[in-house]
Length: 310
Image (tube, rainbow, N blue to C red; front, side, top):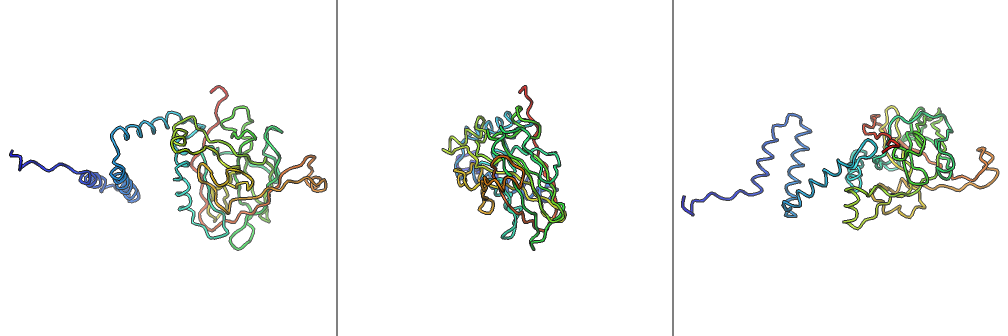
């Protein structure tokens, strides 16, 4: 073949077109939409940054190592989604709520399903004084019209004073600082826990490397996890953030929203201590949750408890 008759070189755009055509017959419509958009954006990304072969291999190795470090109690891929802000974008899009209603925040990689169902006013601090400073959290669950929702469930969890969740700390009692509470006929809930503290997310794996490369810290502001659900109302996964925390507006996983910032009041007045039968000062948070109409749904992700011998 003469030089003038040589075949034209294949372009990256041609490869993209071939790949899109290959998935064009995907039977599931939603899968076809997601895969088509993923391929198109990923290929455009590679062209925009002129991704190099060694960089692609490094990315593949990064993802492999995310899998290697993950186990029943730790999910590095969820942590990665969190620190890249993808989790918050997806959650916010999925739960477009009206002003004044409960907004979403991150589930995080430490949720553990099956917490004990506790009675009104129960204390989920099972580790004693080492868990942290006692805190009472109470209020009501309401609908958009301000009417109480009886039988609503709040699935709650948090860390101890060391910033550790019980499923990754074998020294804590089983299901420590976790519990489920249901509202009474007036929509009220009442529980005791400990005041949240800020803590570092795990940085001994690939996600930690990413944070260091981007010159970011690995701290989460003090927060209290809640999954609020009720019949005929949308289930909301969220967190309440303490307004006195230094990391409030630099959260490593971008979970803070203004409506979720709350104030804990320090209770030291002997009369108020006597009202709740407390012999020591405690923190109090009064907070109402406003739910929107919709479908009640479960949370499919859960971690396990790390064994003491790990």
